[in-house]
Image (tube, rainbow, N blue to C red; front, top):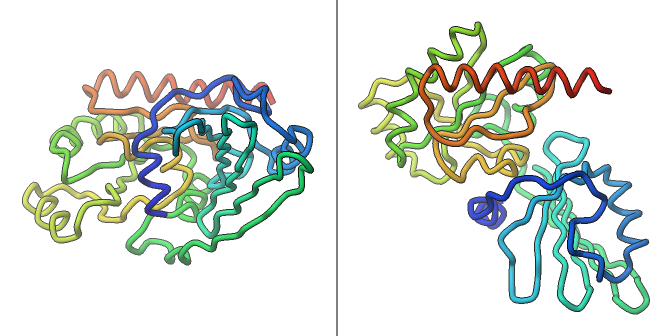
Length: 252
């Protein structure tokens, strides 16, 4: 997951409107075959631009209907396409011959996900959390960004005032010895579980710390809350996100 993390760190462009293909990809070859794959993967089509992996290539990503599974589409200037279906356990890579539209598939297994409640916070942990807790806030912090620790008590007070649970998860890149030293010196009850969930990594929750996201009724809010907020501002944002989730569910 390291390479994937690096790509996600550099991305931060808001989601576009739902479409089967990203904007500005009308020139792609083999669109009928690619569309069949995208539909079978049940993408939501809320494409977000990524850092381009090379010259003359544009990259986009979209969530799917399954928590923890995302799709990345890389469109080249010559019309060729690469698709990646990314999950905790594997990365499925597909390419097409531009002229005959024959697909090539490669499967790259990822490292086996660790058990629940151990060193990492995985998509399995996330799924269990949103299924067992009615509502709450996931708070990602880092010893490398002091405000994510200094502002934690105030932001937690906002969550507490709403009667919600706050779940703390840590920056996946910091060395363990730094984590232990920093957290203990500030006497903060923060989890040392490192963020490993593809769903949260894909939502730019390692772009800046703290990063928070609201969940309710088994669903995550559309947007990540980036940065430290006052208790009043954080409380209001949580209320707005809870209403947005409820409204989206009511429209189904």
